[in-house]
Each structure stands twice: as C-alpha cells, then as structure tokens.
Image 1 (cartoon, rainbow, N blue to C red):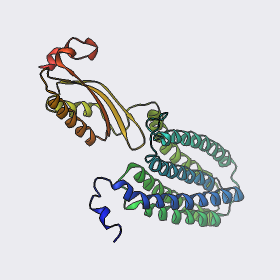
Image 2: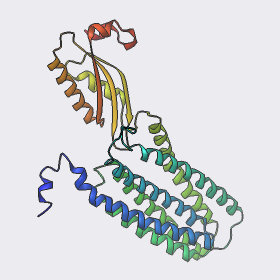
Image 3: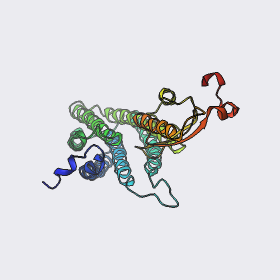
Image 4: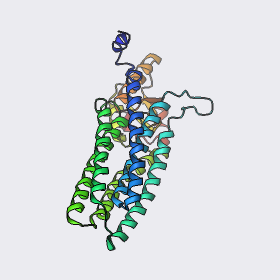
Length: 315
C-alpha cells in the first residue's frame, strides 16, 4: 500500500523508483562476480590454465563496468557545487577510460603468454576447467536475470545485461573446451581459447576505449547525429537558421548543448520564448537534456560572416 501512490506519477520521475532495486541488482551482481573472479583467477594460476585466467580478466572487466554503471546512477544524485558546476557526472566516463586501458594491457599479456604456451602445451586437468567455467555460467546468467526487466530503461542497465550474457556464452565455450581436453588430451585447446577470449575482450574494450576517450574530450556522443540535430532545429516554426552547435556528454546518460538560433527581426519576446520551448522539446527527443540557447535576429546574423550563413538561406 505504501508505495502505491508513487506509480501514479511514475512517468515524470521514474528514476528514484527504479533506483532502489537497480541499485540492489548492481550490488548483488558486483559481489557475486567479484567473488567468482577471485576464485577463477586462483584456479587458473593453480592449474596453469590460460583460458581460465583470460576469462577471469573478462569477468573482471564486467565487474568494472557494473561498478561504473552503479557509480553513474549514484553520481546523478550528487548535487553540483561551486567548484564542480555539473556535479560529478563525468566520473564514470573517466573510470571507463581507465578501465579500458587497464584491460588492454592485461589482454596483451594473456595473448602473449598463450602464444608461448601454444608452442609448448603442458598437461591440464580438463575436468577442473570445465567445472569452474560451469560455475561461471550460473553466476553470469544469474546476474543477467537481475537486469532483464529494466534493460530498456537505461543504456547502462542494457550494457550490464549484455555483458553478463556474453560472459555466460564465453564460460560455455570454456566448459566445452575443458570436456574436450578431458577426453582427448588436446592441451593446446586451452591457450587457443585463451587467445579467443582475449580477442573478444579486445573487441568489446576497443569500443569502450574509443567512446570514453571521445566523451572525455567533449566529443559528440555516439548516439547523437549532428545532421539530425540541425534538421530537427530547422523544422521548428520561427527558426531561420542555426549555427555554433556544440553537443557534449555531461555523464554516461545525459547530454548538453549550446546553440545560436536565428529568428525573425520582428519576433516578440513571447514568440521567442515559445520558439525556445519548442527547440528544447525537439532536442529532448534526440536525447539532449540540457540546452542553452542564444537567439539573434536575422539582420544581425546577416551582417555577421562568422555565423557562416548565406543570406539566401534566411528567406
């Protein structure tokens, strides 16, 4: 009964409602996966299995990204202050950058080691590898289920879900590898799987590295197309031209924009307000939440070559 009333205005502030169980999902996911990483890495070192070590690296990456997403949700609530006027929303971007660089280094080491081992395979307990990887399937799939119902609500939740699911598939490959080693003694299969998992990590990390680098340099976020932004802006009634468009990420979930729009010379303050309102609304649909707009009349823009607008575009 107590939480009944929150659902009525669910639409406008669904974040706090979602947050409690998502918070829990992240914490449970992080703890389970972290314990498994430690166990898997220890087992990998103990039995000398590179595929287990490589998979532990893969799982650690996901613990990292789960932690980042949790951090992102937490930091959205942190109030801005005099020194950090945006609050700490960018922290997850920097952490993602650090995370991806760290991963690339560890993957390099594992692939190098795997190539060496490939030349001189050594006997391995296939059964142990299979059992540990099977535990991995359970933990990854179990954690993925926690995020299943909210995965469409936020990009961070979706990426956590997809990561955990891909981990479960990698673990499944290792189980098969372990069973094959058990029955055939093909010990080279272990470093081969180590290399394959390494390549999977490289592939997924490369995207993270590129995107986090771009966002930390205030580049235009991946999911925003500037030409679409311009098109949407010019469709708005009363907007004659747009220029000086800057779009950047404030956090992993929120984007900001500054823009100059050209309006008719005889626009009343009321019309100007209404144009700005329509503009903000249009941008919200394109996932730009914080818009700062400067307006200028056609006559000023025409005499201002820096605006880069040909006068005939105004008519």
